[in-house]
Image 1 (spheres, rainbow, N blue to C red):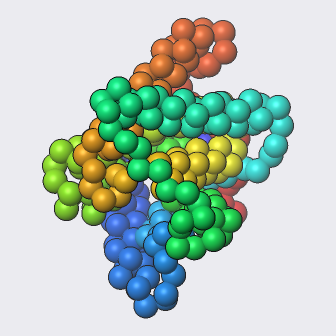
Image 2 (image 1 turned 60 degrees about the vertical axis):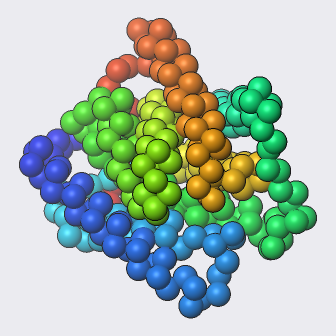
Length: 270
């Protein structure tokens, strides 16, 4: 992004985006029961961030805002997709191991026992994840990185992303705190992963997000307010984020620059 937006204007744009995203998600959540679409398949609230991006682009069209949502597939993206897959395996393998150490049974749900066809759920989960990530990782993350370093931007996005799931607060502050820790950790991991993604944020972020959701659907019952399940997931993704940060910091001198703002190959809004 060539034109650095002033700090005050950035705060205004982020605030408008966040408020629109919150209200849009709330509205979509209210109308979902009337549509007959099962929440097990997809939650319409996930399209709130995309709606927020659309409104911001319309209101601030003079500021040449950008969206890092490229779809180029090359060896660089393939390597990062493999990192995503390995990370998903790591998260759930360690979480399951944690369950066994404490003698807690994993609440595994076989795909055939779900109320809807699993193939439909898989497709819908990727679509829903795209609805979220188009806002969080394709717009907000690179937008913040015009003035902030990757880690700082990731922490802010993760915090806003977590609080945006307002329903978590009905499960108590312990559960909500663990959930927000998990979103901040996942945001840090994704921020570092995408910092050299050359604008291909959507493919990588959606893959990680959707696979995490599918894994949680089949293996854990944190959606029911299970604090132990949420603690296990939050703990493992925090380890994942810290490990990835350590690796990136050790190799930054010859591979990864600390600032991510100039590493994005983005699609400008005409």
